[in-house]
Every structure is written in structure tokens, then in C-alpha cells.
Length: 206
Image (cartoon, rainbow, N blue to C red; front, side):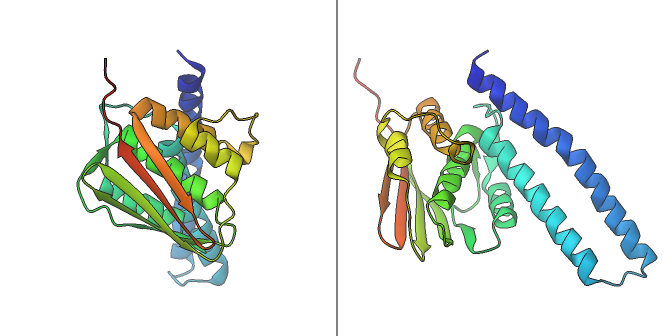
């Protein structure tokens, strides 16, 4: 087993073990609401929103950092639900890829690309995910881009990268996921907009 596969299993284990206590917190919140006559309160609303955000993050991270079996699929409806729940603040994602499903490794690439774009938009923005034939597009409207050039050069061109910090681990992981799926990538950044395209690579001649 490779180190990458092992780290993916560790990530999945963390996500799995965190779900149960968070679910228990949700059950506790329901009991509190029942004893309160079903009435809402700012305190309960804050805890409920924080719990929903934590659960959404775990679901998102399990796909982005967990194992990606090529024989399993990720439905576009589920991907839309997860990204909508994960991002509801100044950085948002609009899943416009329709219905149907994707191979889970491809879904993982998209989720990692979203994390990389989030890192490149310090003031937030809107990412629109769409698909046409063999191309997946992530088009961004933001206030200001600050794309880390060294990290994106590693993703798009395989430029050697020094050991990344933990908050930037999604970039080398995206590069590796692209190589595993055989997808090519193009990334363009302007002052307040960006576009990332993922394409199936043509077979290499023997």
C-alpha cells in the first residue's frame, strides 16, 4: 500500500469517527428544542448552524481527501448538496453540472480544485461548476484573486514544489489526483476572475 493510499484511509477513518459524536450532538439539540416547547432561540440556532457546517465539512473532506475507488460513483445531486452546505458564506459554489453521476476519482479532483480556488480568493467569490462533453469547467467571479503562483505551477505543469504547509496540502494532492485520473488541467487568473478547466487527455502514442 502506498503512502498516499494509507493517508486517504486515515482521512476516511477520521471522518467516520467524527460523524458519530456530531450525530449525538444533533440528537441532543433536538431534545433541547423539545423541552423548550419547540421554540427557537439564538443560542440553539447558532449551535445548529455550527453543527450543520461541521457535518458538511466532514462529508466534503471525505470525498476530497479520502479513498476514491474508480468503480464507485458520486451523483451530481449529492455533490451539489455537499458543496452548497459546505460553502454558504462569502465563498460559494454553484453546481451547474446537471444530474447524472461522476466517477468518484473525478469528483475528488473537482472538490480538490474547489479547495485550491478557495485558497486563491482571499475575499471570497462564486465558483460555477459545469460540464460539457469531456470538459469540466470551474469559472470564478470574485472581488480579488491572489493565486499562489508556485502552488498553481505545481498543479498545472508539475513544477517541483518545496514541502507545502498544511493549509496548502490540497495543491499537491490535486496534482496527484490529476495524474491518477488522467485528466489535464488549465488555470487562468485575472484580477477578479479565474477559470479552471479539466479535460480528458488524449491517449499517448505507443
